[in-house]
Image (cartoon, rainbow over the protein chains, first blue to last red):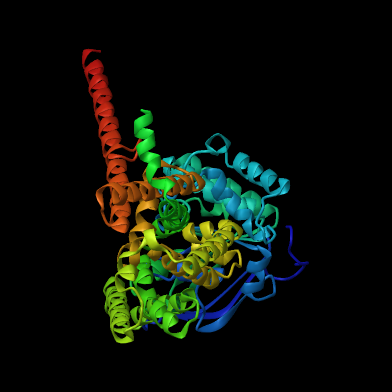
Length: 256
Length: 298
């Protein structure tokens, strides 16, 4: 990956005993430990309100942990952000689709951290934007305003932005909600390819059926970490119950 | 035809009118530019708070003899950031807190004006006085407009990204808090400039209306700024004609013209206007019916 220091043997993402409490007193996360090696694709699953989005935000540096630590490529998040190492794809409802920007404009926003202080796009930036548009099969839509796209196309635009950024870490917050089957498969193959090229990917998802096809590992959380590990050994009945059914807090012992 | 043209140009053969035109055009274009950010960021109420929040600072700046923009920026930031600080620590909703803050600052400004018993033209600050902008104020307008425009050009990409997707800006390591402060400061500076034309009471119109009008006509950011500037500049001309020929308050006439542009756009803008949307709905329904009828006869 461009612009990243030597990462031999260093975890792409290293979350240790992370806890997040919001200002209103709500405890969103408690004692979360999760590490991703470069090239590892990890699914993050849990019920609504289990703290998945909070974990993403903490990883992106958008909220400050109250306890524990997060390091990205062996250093603090702020450094990784300035290197442009972290890319994210927002949830569809967090985007203002009426905003007067074209598909190309949005994808170019992935390059913005790499531009000099005048923020002029160079030939290299344009080339990467074109390549990302092509990879996601939306070249023909480049000059459309983003609101004029279908749900799947909208998602592809933001994936293209993350791709153009050439980050080492990608955070996808529920990329499969409201998209067609074709886009879902496109996203999954993209994620797998990026993993092979060394990108660490954290995918928040509700779709459990195809996890094994594109993920190396899965983390199941419900405020605390219920279970984490390879997909086939972790996605067990007992863990699933602990994460999604009954009283998760009482069942954490069973999960260990 | 030439008679009409003569009638249109005649007012600007007078020095005070042509000066008013130049100052007004610059002010309107600048406010229109900022208004695009205000509208897209959903900051109409914050813009209102800033434009009223400048008043105490303007008056105190006048007393102390410092450039009024200095006092204005400090006082506007105090108003908006103070309201923000209260909102995050209080269960009252943001719009109510902003309302309290801006009316409080406006009232404080009025009290200060009354207490000063100086030569400040009370009505000029409240309602603007485009036809009588003093030379030293005019210089401040040029200077502040140039500074604001330069910052908007330099920070264009970052400000657009900040308005569109503040999280992405943060994830790219941009100083989001500083961009936020920059936008607030630019708004305060522009309000000071704008109040010369339409006064403290109406300046917020210049910071909301052109951007909203332009939003209805365009699909890209730069064209949106251009259309906003266009309608704002034409509104200044209409306002000046109205005050020349019909002796109408200039500031009020300018704002009224801008409101008119918005109303017409709401009705007639292609794609986003009500008429266009209704027609495209009717077209779709006709196609649906034709298709339904075809499938019945099959």
